[in-house]
Amino acid sequence: MGEIVKYKIDIIKRTFEILNDHYPHFKDKDREVTFLMNCLLGLIVAIFENEKMKRTILKGNIDEQFLSLIPNKIGFLNSRDISENLTSQDLTQISLNVHHKDNLSKKDKYWFVNKIRNSIAHQNIEGINENGIWVGVRMWNSYNNKKDFEIVFQVDELKKFASELASLFIENE
Image (cartoon, rainbow, N blue to C red; front, side, top):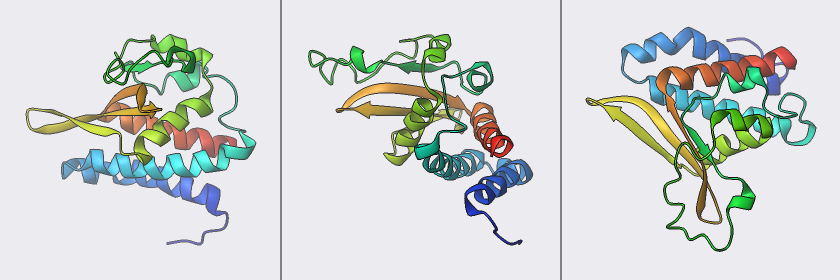
C-alpha cells in the first residue's frame, strides 16, 4: 500500500492515481459518477483546506488553464447582484447563462473552488439522467438562502475537472 509521508500531498497524489487507474472499473459497473463525486469531494476538501491560509495554487484570478477545466453550463451572480430586494423566489433557478463562462476570468480561483466545495458539503447536488443513465450532475451554492452559483458537469467534464485539479495541485506543491 505504501507509506504516507506527507499526508496533505500524498492524499491528493493517491486520489489522482485512483482516478486514472480505477475509473474504467467503475464506468463498466455504471458507477462512474458516484466514484467521481467521491474523489472530487476528497480532492476539494484537501485542496481547499490546504489553500485556506496560504493560497499558493489557487491564488489569483481564473486564467486560461483553469478556465479550460470549467464546463460551459455555469451561472453565477456577484454578491452585489444579490440585493435585499430580491426574493428567494427570484433566485430559485438562476439561469445557466447569467454570466458567460469567460466572465469567470474576473473571479478568483479560490472563490470557484469554494463554490464547488459548498455545493458538495451542503449536498446541493442533483443527478442528471438520460434514458435511465446517470450522465451528469448539477451543483449549486446558496447565499442567504438565495442561489448564487450553479454548474452542470457531464461525466467526462467531471472526470477532467477532478483529475486536472489534482494534477494542478501536485505540479505546484
